[in-house]
Length: 140
Ligand SMILES: [Zn+2]
Ligand SMILES: [Zn+2]
Image (cartoon, rainbow, N blue to C red):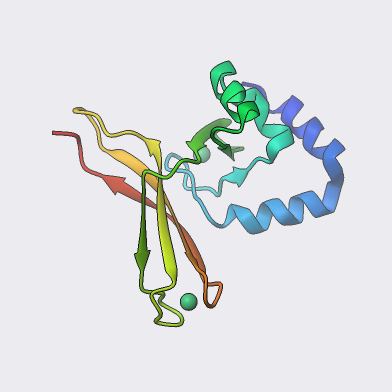
C-alpha cells in the first residue's frame, strides 16, 4: 500500500488544520508494531482501507468503521464501531458513575493469539475521556 495517494489527499483536504487535528487525535492510540502514534482517518480518507462489504454496511448506516493509520508501517487498522461491550464505570475525575466504557474489537482472539480491544471511556457528567487498548487472552 503506497503512502503517496494518502498524502496527496491529506494535503488537498487542507493543510495545517487537518494536521493539527490529526496530531491531537494521534495521541490516543499507538501502533503495536513500531510504537508510533496512529492517526484516525476521517470519512473521506478511510474508504480505500475498507473492504467493499464494509463500505456497503457503512452506506446503509448499519455500522460505522474507523481506520487508524500508522504512517511508519503503512498499515491501517479497521475498528468496527459496534461495541463489543458497554458498561457504566466510576469516573476517575469526578467520582460519579456517569462514565460509560465501550470496548470495540480490533483483533479478535483466536486459539493461537490473544486479541486486542479498543476501549473508549466517556464521562457524561464532567466530560472526562480516555482512549486505550486492552489485550485479551487467547480463546480457549
Ligand atoms: Zn507502526
Ligand atoms: Zn466524570
